[in-house]
Length: 142
Image 1 (cartoon, helix red, strand yellow):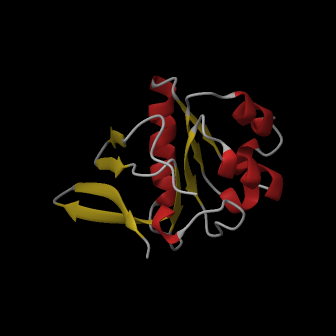
Image 2: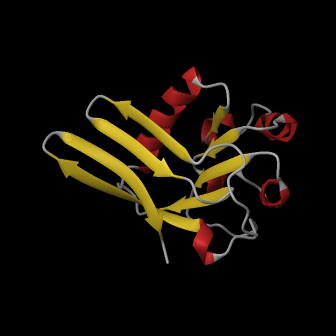
């Protein structure tokens, strides 16, 4: 179910010699990629950004027993970033996220099943190194 972003159109941050620059074109964007492509590193950079910006919330497998489900359900107007979605999200949470029109989601994982996404909402991480600086962007997977 394609919905335009409700919170922000771009996520940008810098960390040492890394830059994250994501153009957000959908309300739910699922980010796939092989192991070692930088997904977890990018998530950690976005966690640092979330510490500065109250509109961003980050969750990963370490939050599995912390009440993250009720925290997401109480959120309104937030950019919610989820890493290791295959571990963290059960079918009920996937269905909740698929129908949530009050928050925006960037989800890192391998299996988008249950989120009611179409091909245009599935993205891959890209990286480009120029000199000593690495820039991470996203592109449509299909």
